[in-house]
Length: 480
Image 1 (cartoon, rainbow, N blue to C red):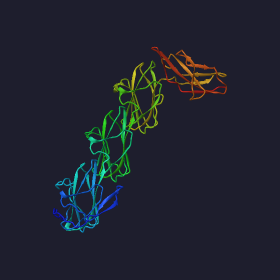
Image 2: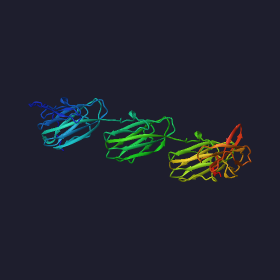
Image 3: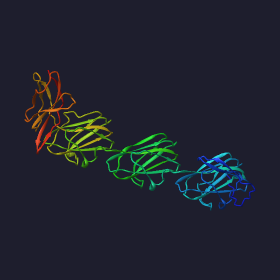
Image 4: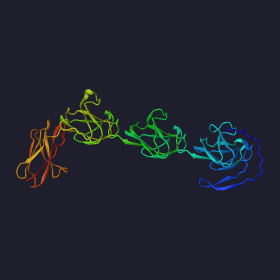
């Protein structure tokens, strides 16, 4: 490509300026200058034009060189220049300079546009409230008309971590990368809860891969999460949940070598059980509940205190973890190997049977439970003071029922409950105050032809309190 030396001689025009009105692509009217308009031959004589307005001019003779200038506004915007060689008989050359002295180019080279060809050149992020200069020339002395237009696209998210945009947790945002050099920075702050956090990214319209990194702080050196393989167009990628520091600000960088829109969200899920023995969740005896392994690195710690009973039963079941779940019980919160009193593992939908779940523990002592899993899901856990076992019901005559059960070590006595439905409301019908009495004949208020349901629990009085075992299994009988 031959570059003709810039000519700075002053042109003399005899033509009358003409202008025509046209509809702007931005929704309003704009002035399109007619051919033979006066154009400056030097930077000092550069013709001022407005960003967003298409200009139409001409290379009129072999010595013609055209200079223009435009001024950016105060917005944080990307700029591009579009030049169309409408009728110039050779290539149209153009450059953009940062100042009137024509020494510092915006971009690395000159641009040449062939006849009946349009080229759009990205100028990137320009300085705010600054005047730039455009030089237009024709290669090999070509003449004819050309048009050009400088456009801007305001950046919706700042490009530096120092100006990172604050986003709220549990709220999805939609933003865009307006330029191949556009980097979007966000920040979010965790609250004081013990929560897991996940990151979801959707590439809505970028034709290539998009990326995001989550950093521990504004230094952007320590990763919390990142997706180096890229998120394809119209795809969504969700990062595994991680436990983040409480009341801490984290930073996010979104980038690509394509332009387009995306969605991003930070989601928090409160951890239902604390992760350390020192903050272990306290559980009551005889109170079975459901809990969750919410992350493959989630560790659930519980603590409970035994009563005056010494025999206990572990209630533990893998409800829907599609993998192994483990449980360990320790006699001290250090959870050392020499403090371990029980351990087992369960696969999907497995549960600890009655025999394996029996544990002998000390009276009025604190114990610690540790639950871990290699996958996420729900499990069931409870610690029962050993219930009376081998509960049996039998006929004792007309409108009489005999209830029998196994003896519970250290019990002072037993309570018998009755209901007319298995899962209905049970009423206590008898308190037995002798530890060796493990039989009761119910003959009060029974009706012929009715079915009754029974359950029994032991009690122990110590230190001014009454302690109870778990209830036995339920047994039913039809009265004749």
